[in-house]
Image (cartoon, rainbow, N blue to C red; front, side):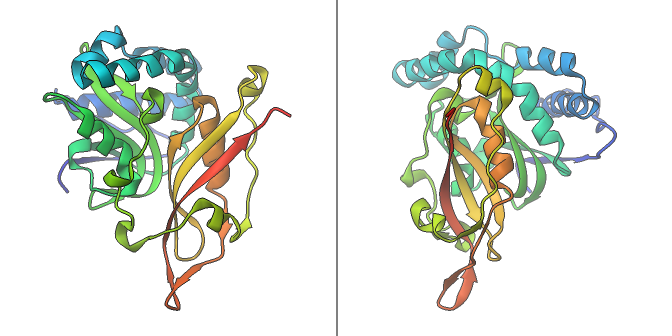
Length: 279
């Protein structure tokens, strides 16, 4: 399984990390520490890790890595989302730590060309020069694809430390040309069409900190619906960082009528919009 490092995650104890100095080993160590702190309720440690995940002198860095035009756009989006992103990271790790499975670290250059890995593809396409980004998740992986689990985001080495980078954080959006319309046989169906086939929609819990900060808006998710109508895969396309966790938690519980193609049930590739309105 090229480009993937697996590390078992247990519910009550942090994973052990070797003493080697490779890039992926250092990232595994950082992620293991974050997940352990999340499981133990160590908020001060999570806040410390979150501060360290922010990119220093980001405007210069984005231009150097992605070029002047694209780097300027990404740096502007990063500045707008900077404060809220840092505040959201502890809750992100708490959410990821609830998932049983393996700690999966994948080089974006080795991710399969599927719509569930569009963010990695977008980053790899935009990079200028030789630099490695890694997608971190906890769950079950198969041949380079995350079958089920929770994605912690994308990480890159900046200034001697790993920093978190996510497409929604820098304003990148999926392009139809970068995503296969039928990943692993999934049938592409519009979100409005699938909305009519929903048989169970659990409403999201409005995050209290987002409500108190008067944050509202829409979280758009890329979803793979299984042959049985259950949610098989989830990934954030866009939305405010303070709202994405609640949207993911809710949609994970949704169910749909099975979709038939020539009389046989098939997986469905679609999008879901979760709206958070203060009123």
